[in-house]
Length: 84
View 1: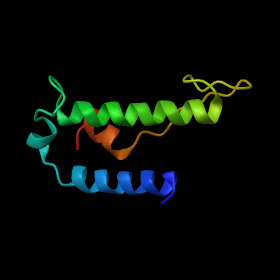
View 2 (view 1 turned 90 degrees about the horizontal axis):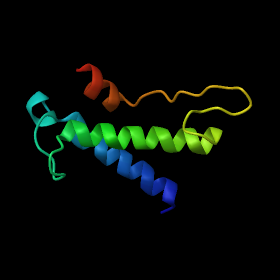
View 3 (view 1 turned 90 degrees about the vertical axis):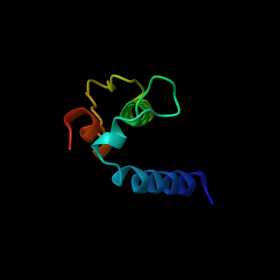
View 4 (view 1 turned 180 degrees about the vertical axis):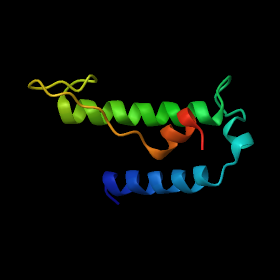
């Protein structure tokens, strides 16, 4: 399995887990002390978007040759920040 296949499989598994959570579970404590499940998912999504912006455009701000880049948020970021 290539690293890309491994990452895709990991993303699919995470999607399966997260899609089954109800509101109470989103707000429940995670294994990270002081963080809810929603906090952890938001952290993962923002880290992924920052990595994508950096890899694609060379900076977190997404500027290269005068262009601005803003990664489209994942479905889970929208759920965490805007509700269901």
